[in-house]
Image 1: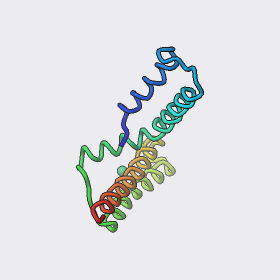
Image 2: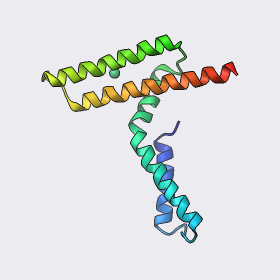
Image 3: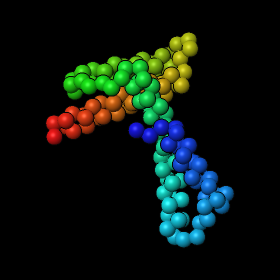
Length: 126
Ligand SMILES: [Mg+2]
């Protein structure tokens, strides 16, 4: 899984092109810088989810569960998202759009953890 260190390395490479440390002279080099910029944009977009996945792994370690349990874990996160939405809708004290965003990121990250677990299972099943 990528992280902000990978993003930094990609940004460093783009800056090396932009500052002329790596001259852009060929179509191939133009395609490389274009790909790097696409990768940077994609990584920046996904960074909140990547960081949440890293936070989850640091907190819980690698998790391997049956799909039914993943469904319940994701359901718990989805429930927290629903609660945050309702609290904002009904103007609970302290309710914020940021809280909704946080719960949405956590829900998506659990879904990715579930996919990673499925992939590990598939690899070990051969
Ligand atoms: Mg949550």
